[in-house]
Amino acid sequence: MTPTASRSTDEEAFLRQFMAEERALLRFILRYVPAVADARDVLQETLVTLWAKRAEFDEAREFLPWACGIARFKVREFWRNQPRWQAFAHDDLIALIDARREVLSPELSLRAEKLRDCLAKLPPDQLASLNRYYTEEEPVETIALREGRTADAIYKLLQRSRRVLLDCVERGMRTEGTTA
Image (cartoon, rainbow, N blue to C red; front, top):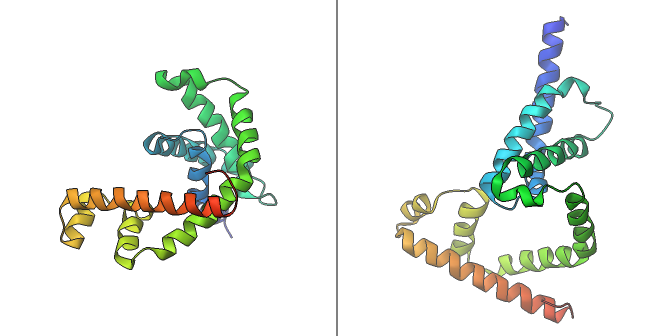
């Protein structure tokens, strides 16, 4: 195999790993940057850095922890460079967020389980609309056209769905004896 072909194969393997972990990496960034548009910007900057450092990646290690380490630096950089986020740009804030998440982890896991149970109880058409909006990230207008409804009707459906899911999760948490 020529050096060019080998490099091309390595680059393809690297891209495949990144693409497989992209959603997990975005979820990681969303822990620290809760605005989705901002988190996507941080993800993009993280990808640029990952690509530049791809030769440094040790294939014997797991990709996601390495990528999350780089994303952590990009989050700090984002906090420093965005006026509305500068108050968060303290070195110990990420550690505090991680520690708090660790404490809340059992409750968060239980909430995620309850949410899955509650989603399973939704009517199929309502679940489909939620999936289009949240999973497939379709704009409300597109969903409305697809379903033959107005955008306002879809906004109201999403709002009602969120309320139903929140109430269902809170009931499930109370049943488990956990504070909601």
